[in-house]
Length: 511
Ligand code: BG6
Image (cartoon, rainbow, N blue to C red; front, side, top):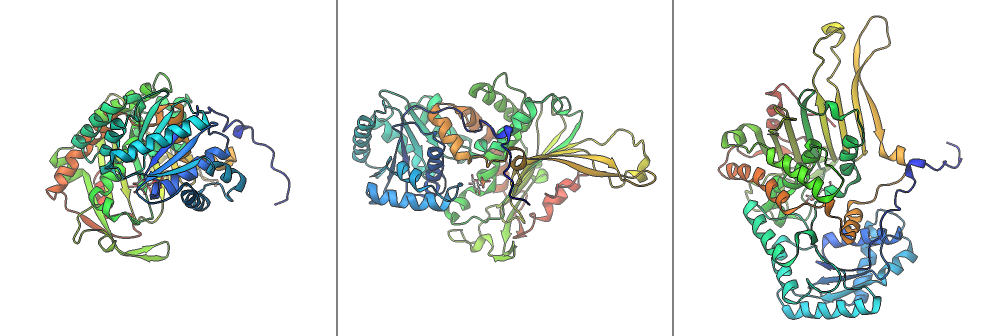
């Protein structure tokens, strides 16, 4: 390599020069928690670095801990330094950002504390000429969403000049009924247009690119249907275990934690019809139609077309790791799944008969999220069976992470006398085409929320419809059908996962 300067890449131009929001105050409930430290504060710092935060913008951290503005700022600085995607942290930008960070102790059960919060916000609003705009971010455990929403109403924090928006993290409910109840509570306090339900996968550049890939090109859409596609595989695999989230995870499990939201969103974006415009309700209408078209699983389907597994100890990336039941805060003899494989059908004109296989798991051999579209084999083998022995069917893989990109697999002639065919790949890699690191999902989502664009957030009916797909599976699992299997950490899940596909003449793609 020479030290020659890299020519500016025209494709990377204008990547960040998009919309700037109006001044606002963002209150983060759960300001001392994991999400705030790992994701929200670093994302806000990076927005500030890209000059995408409006003048007058301020963050008010709210949590139960006894902290001052200064001690919270010190804490925020540590987290940003540790978790910012851009490194090293720019001290000048950091200092300017921290000047706009404040803290107040709030006990969610005390109305007095919310009134104190209201006073603090009003003072800041006055001093910084914000004009009344508020974002309330619930970075707290789900059981607190209800009380926070109600206290916001009781203290009058949900109304007044400017906009008043609430951001709610997943999981939104734990089944259809609880999600519906939560929707009703939240909608009594905030208008649906002001409710921003987060599924951070929607903020990932590569997830948004599914729509760009499908609807900004003409060559893929004509073959994107049951006449050409054999099957779709969606994989969300992680090397990590449940980390320190035993208490949450043991109640949730992978079906609720990943499949109900991230995996079904990937399915909906892959299967949806083109929306008339890239506009919040138009896009979400199309996604809801797909979710509604998913055939609900009967008990017999759940027994045959779902697999649930739990990791035991094993080796991941050369490190010996403990089994799920040895993790802190996991119940003895827990039957919670850390791996799911299942098959769904989308009963509509476009997708009739095409299986959508989903697999998601913790403690898999590698971290990979991808959507693989497998096409039918050619109707006739012009070159004969022998020549095509090493030929796989055409496939498009949308690699969400890591090595973000898209690859197309097709057959080519092996250079030699005679004719032998083999599969080759044509690859697009974000990193080499755009030469910039994509922003973190939370940067995009926080900014969209301040701008008031809910396109990349889930609507009430969307969340509820997704639960109607999950509920029958949970119900059958509670009755022990199919039984929970185990798998050693560092493997691709229980053998039953592979058998489920083999029985249908297919196999999982090995990423
Ligand atoms: C979260 C889940 O929503 O997504 C976690 O609760 C999971 O269990 C995480 O680890 C995965 O997100 P990412 O962005 O690392 O793929």
